[in-house]
Image 1 (cartoon, rainbow, N blue to C red):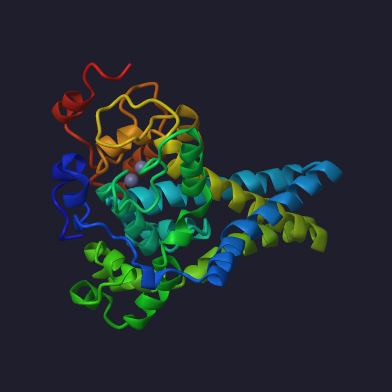
Image 2: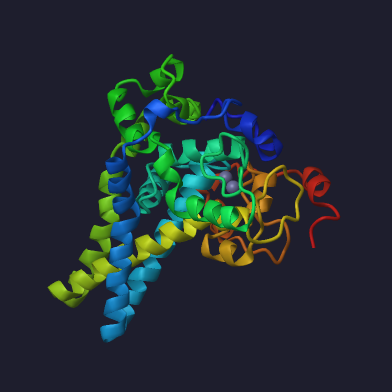
Length: 356
Ligand SMILES: [Zn+2]
Ligand SMILES: [Zn+2]
């Protein structure tokens, strides 16, 4: 944390300088590309399995509806894991927009990991890269970069929603890279290796110097599993039946996982194509109220790209930012502090006359 700029600098500084990301694109080269079989396996694990689980939920619903317990498990697990993604992975680990206690930081890492979108460090590295090169060469999941014509734009949207990670070979390799440097993760920062995984690691000088955090991060598989075990246990214990355990797994595990995954991925696709571009930025980010509600604030994506270091994404009274509401409450309880916001002058300079 000591390497971070001041709160006011963070809230207004250009993304690349703020987030430690080099200005050259972090693309992979041809030698790093994944084989067809590997891509198919990753696609099946990341998209196929959740889709099958979601299908099981639809089948159960058509057959017997959904009980209050299972609905509660779905909503409760959605609230927990989406909070982990937006407040934890996004606003804390990727952007460092506030400070918090070590136990709460660990909880945010675990909840965010339960969403199964990559470990906190990998998620942060990819996201910092997105901000440093938004909709430019080097952005790892832009839906609009190099896209022309309606069909090509649709393909861009589809790729940003479902397929982009297949073109990021560092994703299956990043955890193993950290494992190989488990005794001294910060040594990755001075490594001369130039593959994509190393270049992504170099976007994390603050996080890699925090060895307890890296150790917690390396239990990512355990945290993903926990996201399925918890609703299974609650469902089984509440009904004292195997059937209750299984339906808890389907609703609180698979259906929740599928929804959180697709809605978060939609920030990459919809968040840069559908909505209002009301704050001047050099990208295609959009404000979208429906996405903002579903993602606890990330859907005010144009606001966020204008002020990526800001703890809040809502700059008008009618813009609901549930993530910021939660952080304001935690701040009153003394559990979070140093909430970083742009100054009123910086805010009005960027937003005046363009926002309605
Ligand atoms: Zn974006
Ligand atoms: Zn961001």
